[in-house]
Image 1 (cartoon, rainbow, N blue to C red):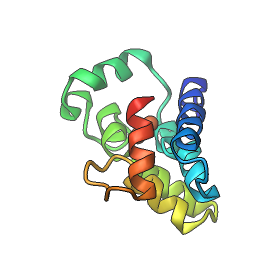
Image 2 (image 1 turned 180 degrees about the horizontal axis):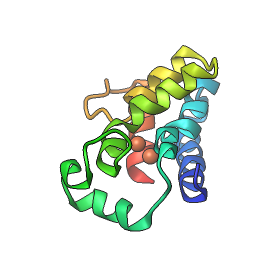
Image 3 (image 1 turned 90 degrees about the vertical axis):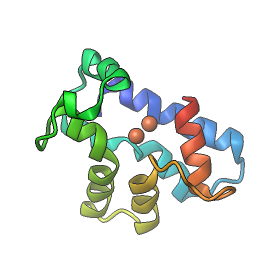
Image 4 (image 1 turned 90 degrees about the horizontal axis):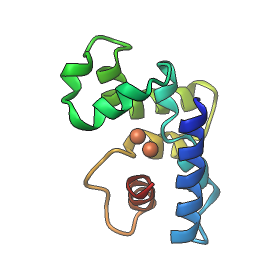
Length: 118
Ligand SMILES: [Fe+2]
Ligand SMILES: [Fe+2]
C-alpha cells in the first residue's frame, strides 16, 4: 500500500477506536485493511482527485484501470484478505466498507462512518 493509503488506514483505525473503544480486533484489522484493494494500482494523486469529481467510467472501466479500482477496490481487498488466509469476518467488513446502507449500530456502520470522516 502507498504511504498515503497506509496513513489513511491508520487514521480510520484510530477513529474506529475513538468511536468504539471496545471495538473487537476484527473491526480494527478491517479498518487497517479496508482500502488494501487500491494497492493493485500505483497511487497517482491526480487520479485520486479526479476520482472524487468524475464518474468512474471516465477513469476507465477495464480491469486495473483507475475507475475499475475505485469501483471494485472493496471486493479486490476482500479477495486479498481471503487469499492470504485472513479471517472471513475481516474480509466481509473490507468487502462492504463502501456500502451506504450499513445497519445502524453495526460494526460495519462504525467502519463506514470512520472512513467517511477520515
Ligand atoms: Fe474504500
Ligand atoms: Fe478509505
